Length: 213
Length: 327
Image (cartoon, rainbow over all chains, first blue to last red; front, side, top):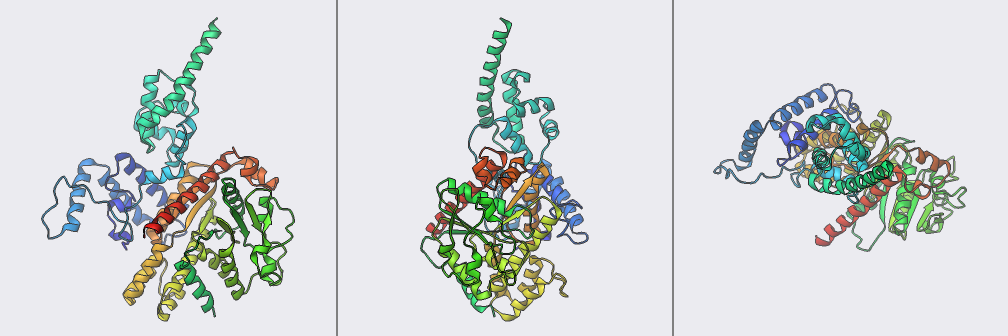
């Protein structure tokens, strides 16, 4: 069983070597919240200096893992670790999933856990997207910063104010980016959302047509 | 004293019986007022609606109110009858509720002088709970970390801890996890000396300075490697589930993941985040109406989230079964 001092960067952030940039970002944000000085989840467990020491490890892990060059260098050292005394692994060899405290199954992906809390059925409507965003602990502004999409549009997507959104080509792109950002598979989610959009948009057009008469 | 209980608990933990038994799910949390009974009543009602035969047992002899949550104003029989040895057959205490497939064992009218069962009675109760004819048995534990409460938590297949996103509840939840784990650990240790060290570590101000299960593990590993291996085995098997109740913000939801992380890093314990239930004005109204939310407002936000947790419990059970089948 590994103590905190023995854990590698992935274990510290409780993510895995195949994590995407977004997953690393999410894991980092969660760790920051968990190990902040006045963390609700931690303050009664931490002894003097515990949280600060962990935050330092978290920052270090994030500095390395969020930089693709430093990360691949780090990954190379990880691959060498178990193979001590043996010839270096093939450069193209797939990364070994890291092990949990018991040295067995891989640490569960955060993404998986988020999906587990959802029952995984039904359309991806605005409300469901919002639930996923909240689960990741992200505000609209966070998604806007990452995706460079106007926050008002993101809000309209959640509220399904189809009439206030631009043309469907743009909306599809927005929803894809939004979904990727909250750990969902963008293309599928966008397809599901756009069905609703197209229907709503059709209704709007008809409405306008009747109004103008 | 306690040997008989230990033997029974060890037997139950090893799960030697191959027959198809009810899934026993104890629900605790340390603190009162976090919504344990509300969650139990609604998870039970939710599974009953899906067609499973469910029994909800109120284990809180000193503050019973599960009967109110499922809509039975004045139960005519109660667990207190079993405690006082007026009734030997737990099955005879089952009450039908307004919800089809859902039965209740209430805990009303306890003897104020001696509400808790004696140790031997507790052993008997735990055996009887296992024998109930149902698909699911939920056991709503009282507040606190009293020995009786911890024993009940320990015999279940999968203990659930209900937490409200507030400091008092989170503190007590950690206390609860620690107490449950140490008690289970004490059973697992073979040597008297190691059991004594576990007992010592249960005192938070112990003079060896052992604060967390991980630190205790290090201590035991150095003293006795074989016991250390048993320790790791116990730790691996101990997987409490968490439900965060009454969430209002994104941070409240994240709390479940954070507690999971703290348990992993500081205790070496893998907790499962089963889900969360939204703060919902309709939940309060359903309690006022003295009926499960699932029954009165099935389309409410909180009801939908509770149903998700119920479906997740089902999925977990199916996964366990297939694992057992392949073993």
